[in-house]
Length: 316
Ligand code: NAD
Ligand code: UDP
Image 1: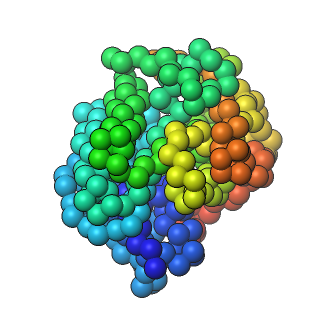
Image 2 (image 1 turned 135 degrees about the vertical axis):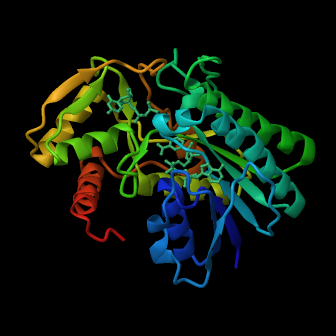
Image 3 (image 1 turned 60 degrees about the horizontal axis):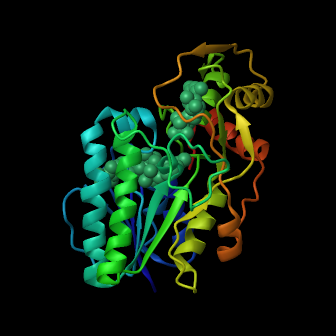
């Protein structure tokens, strides 16, 4: 039985990954400092004897014996990663360093959850893995996107210098059940606003684009990457290439929720990328992976989830 460590395991993506790996009969160690993660996300897994939870902050070293490490610990929403920018940098740099140190010591394979943000405000469209990006090194998003770029550098250097078995996935905007209701990301904001008949807050004129991947598709891609037999280390883009403007997204959510909310326009945050869409040819060729869930189908599942959360119903 493989023993797997998932840092950030109580977060949105991490909790789905814990669940999926337990269902594949792995022993799962979920490590989290509960900054943006929640016990409710993993409560239903606690009865499984193969599951263990560790409250720990990856900025500090920890000694564990595992076969695989998925390094997801890091707040992903701009409002949360900007709340304590220095902590975000520490998590990405010192935290990744600690996890790489562990991988080296116990000869574990380590997968880093990188991000499309490493491409910054891209001048190439769609974004291929070969593109080096257009990132502001001193802006308010830098703690996250430069932090994740250093994390990729550390992964590559541990691989070249110490032979650590690594995997890098660049995750594009992902949504689904267990996103935090106060997460601040666009899908959860718009759905919650629509369901509570509050104004839908479109930042800028809403012409900026994103490509939204449903969580189940993303988790399948991550596991395929970790387990690929070719020792393909990446980096590889994982995301859904269907591109929408933020205004289109608002209109689709209004239609699906049959909401009476009005769309209002708010200032565009600094350094907000104008467009984003993954080129997923590499993932398709190397991992035989492509997303299956269409936007409206995934949004309906997410809407059902938030309806229950808003009613105070059990969502597990
Ligand atoms: P999330 O905020 O729900 O989860 C992050 C988890 O990490 C939380 O449980 C949080 O408590 C934990 N954490 C944060 N700092 C920590 C620390 N120092 N030590 C231990 N635990 C810590 O976010 P998510 O959407 O689940 O994202 C997970 C990972 O995937 C992140 O690394 C993020 O950068 C990456 N990612 C996500 C997306 C997306 O669209 N969801 C896109 C690109 C990359
Ligand atoms: N956005 C918006 N209204 C919101 C939240 C976000 O218009 O209430 C916009 C945001 O400015 C960005 C896009 O939606 O252009 C995606 O934002 P998110 O924070 O979800 O992810 P990221 O910017 O990291 O891709």
